[in-house]
Image (cartoon, rainbow, N blue to C red):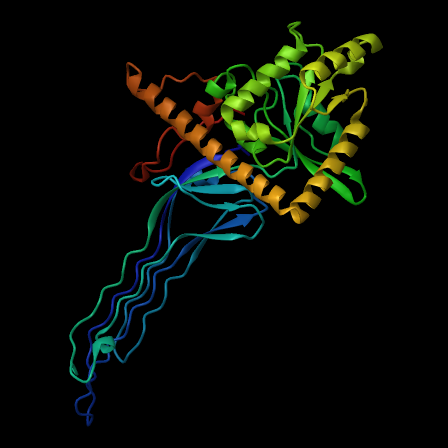
Length: 412
């Protein structure tokens, strides 16, 4: 199944039913009076988090949703039926943004959570509602009100405790494959991972956490180089960022310089994201001698003095137990502080909100750049390179619902 983490939909709530104009006319009953009933309210539209979904691909082919209209009132003071509400299922971790106002409407983080995104129109009133002692034969009715119409941007951000960060071929997929039951693709060429992967790391019988592996970053990713920075949004919910650094890069580059370059890209994408705890894991240390490991560890300690630093090798099973054990302990401490320290909880909430704003701002900037490139192309078509993953996997523009389903090409 294709992994789509962003989509635009239009939701239209149901229209309220019209009020009825009617008078009671029965044999032997004089002056029956008005008996026009009210209409029914229009149906609401809710988004509901469903744990069985892990992609937004369905919304690319079904971008429009309309709830049922309310029925009109009828004689004998009969009220029209209410429109049935519509429940649209989305993956857990979906953020909902109003395209017009750029307001974050809600964040569906837990399964079966429901979010009202379009309110149905209010019912119209029949003429029976207007009768009074001075107006015994009213002919006034009110029509039902139209339901809300909204264009929504859905952004999926995976829920994980620890997020892996690093250059391509740093060993992220190998690590998550070793410490969890995940089975990501592993190969000896860059950008093996094209979509995020999740794995459950079980430290003990009653202790586990979720680790997320995202595609590798390169210098310039925040401006669209490589696979771009589109998948960084999946790190925005993590509580700890684990930065893997290849200690024996194939291009003979300096590991310390590589680590600094990737963190600069992270800072360019979201300054608030760098306020999360960042741990360093020096990967593939089994290819270095003991003296070289000591020298490299000292170099990283000098530059990243306040960071936890670990020497690991996924294939050699070096340092993995200590790393996962300490991560589990850090997550427990975080949860305890979150529950007992109000100031810490408020600080975390502020960081989370700022990250959400940064993710949305970067997404809108990327979309505007693609639209600009499309308009500036000589033949009027999008000249984005096929190697630009954002051009293949995100919306190029707002959906035109009159043109039928949108055809989306996604690299696999």
